Image (cartoon, rainbow, N blue to C red; front, top):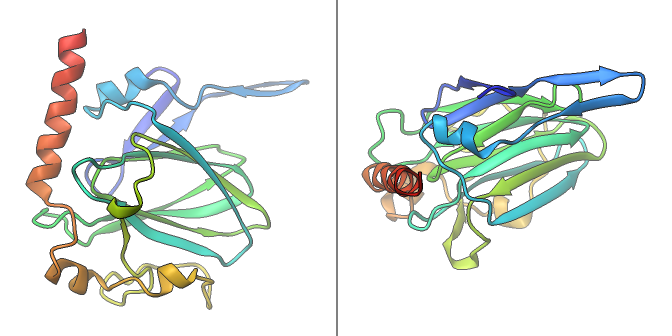
Length: 206
């Protein structure tokens, strides 16, 4: 990827990408998304929906994930303010199940976090009007969207606020253990097959 340099996170199939910024007396230009870059990482990405959220400091959103199939990969950046963005391996049977990583996304470095299908996502707003924009590989499907409690002590995510502000839905989300026991989490091998199928389709098109 020429314009956006990828760095693996501690969670497999999630990458931090840092775009090259070109500034002059007019401002800044950057290329923050290129589909062939994700192809090269082994995670072809087809844009189906784009979302934006605006949050005040201390708001925590997540941890959200979608059923696989169909799955929903995300390509996330912060265009105003700053957030601590978190990815969690929720794939039952994964060697890194329950592992998480956190990166700062802001309007200075303009970094991006890519998460493959089956991974959980959440963030904490650090500044007023922090605006997160994310591209999704599938549309919102209410029956296929779920969450794990962001304050689950087993996950022990190091949120940078003393009293996180949660939505009623996120506050009522199950723990990781309860979601696993209920069979509600994505299956690791199913996710791997989903990634392989996506690569195969891209290869046939090429």
